[in-house]
Image 1 (tube, one colour):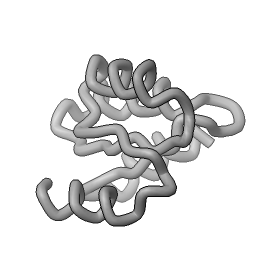
Image 2 (tube, helix red, strand yellow):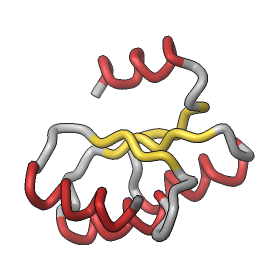
Image 3 (cartoon, one colour):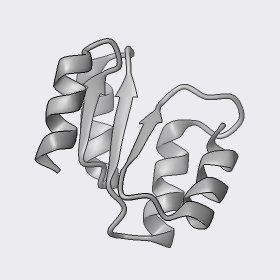
Length: 83
């Protein structure tokens, strides 16, 4: 869930976060916003199978490095390599 993602980020300070949009409790967009507020340099890739047009724009607006359908493994790995 989003609350756990924030706590884990603060404790681990990872190089990269992959965040699903749909989660129990706090959703991925809200969690990504909170992480970016804590660390503006956080590198977050949003993953989902939801409406790509809507959520890719929202991901970009909050400062995520990308939005990819979570079933497109090759594209996810390509984006990670480019970061």
